[in-house]
Amino acid sequence: MHATHTAVLPSGQAPWLERLNTEWHELALRAYMAIVLAHWAEHLLQAFQIYALGWPVPESRGLIGHFFPWVITSETLHYGYALVMLVGLWLLRHGFTEPLERRWWLIALGIQFWHHIEHGLLQLQAITGPFFGRPVPTSIAQLWIPRVELHLIYNTLVFVPMVIAMYYHLFPPATATQPRCTCAWHRAA
Image (cartoon, rainbow, N blue to C red; front, top):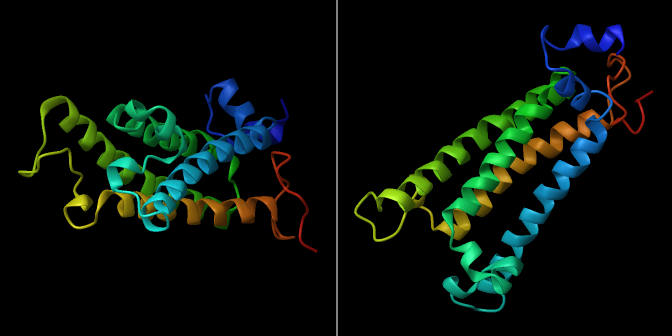
């Protein structure tokens, strides 16, 4: 462990968390982005099935749902993904040390926190019964925006600041402090 690494993280930080945000940060970010992009692919395929192929919404289940329809109808799967996203953003935040990259990462974290609350509300309704006088579990924003479109909006609102944060993280300005991880492709001149 290097002294510079210890100085950046809060004292008493778990050793595995420190390593996750230093020597393992690049690999952790790649794995996290693979999960995020796979989820995006599912939602984009679902939108393609609805808008390009003209499939009815209940039959437009993406790739996984096409082969395993019961998985897509489970609120547990959706809540689980929202939780994985939230935990990933939370755990990897210490690796984003420069002000711009950190600000954008925390914006994505805040939006994902709300998205997680919405999925928690849906999960609660799946267990206890629908709210809002609706026949199916309905989130707050879903009172105004249909579910398929709402998920595309939420995923975009989380993804865009995440990508901006990663851009600043991968291409730090010349004035940036010495990186704590190996993520940066190069430093600006």
